Length: 262
Image 1 (tube, rainbow, N blue to C red):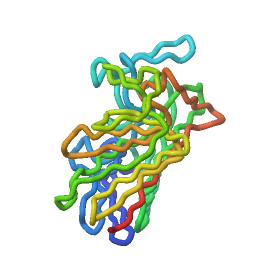
Image 2: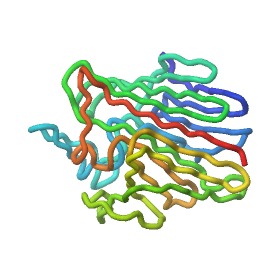
Image 3: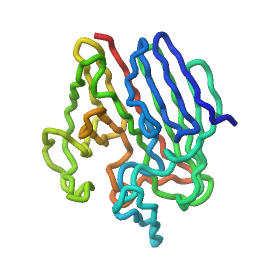
Image 4: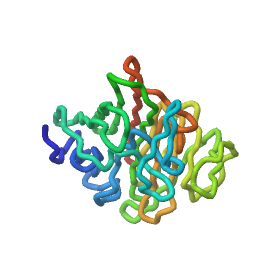
């Protein structure tokens, strides 16, 4: 199966999919205008089998304690799949389906499937983690890097979370929920009705990031980009809010970006 880049098109929307570079969406262009920050580590990458940081790289599954590489010392961050080559299971003009088999250093066998589907006014990313062997905790999420500025216009971010996870000095949630504070953020928010965040470049474009999941991390501390990351649990969620993948029940999630020209 090929790991070469794939181009999807629908109307004047064009998406570059990079199976060989962590299964990421490398670019999203609307009428030739690039919405995603460019670069090998940017675009939009899948976070799996965990999202954000794991405290000290350690998580517990029953009596077993597992250690992940500390790629953001003193923590482990953003899963293993973004550093791996995915395979193209199928593709068409406006859709691609990629797969990735979980491998070391992740201690459990399983398969991740990601579907990337483009229309003229939306992009939907869907992912599942399944296993036919032992059950294990996991998380799913996406980490898009939206360009802060388009055609000289800075983005405005609008959302109404029910709470903000209090962030400790180690950048991880303390376990306390607080009223949302003004940015800049590198913070996790709760939206029990589903993630719903609007990015507006006034006079140019409105883009809505939605998901049925209730957790979103917003990161806007960099000048170049703004990140809006829907996910199935908060940072360190393998320890605090584990979601189990079992032979009978995969873990599934999706997010849709929909846009309107202004």
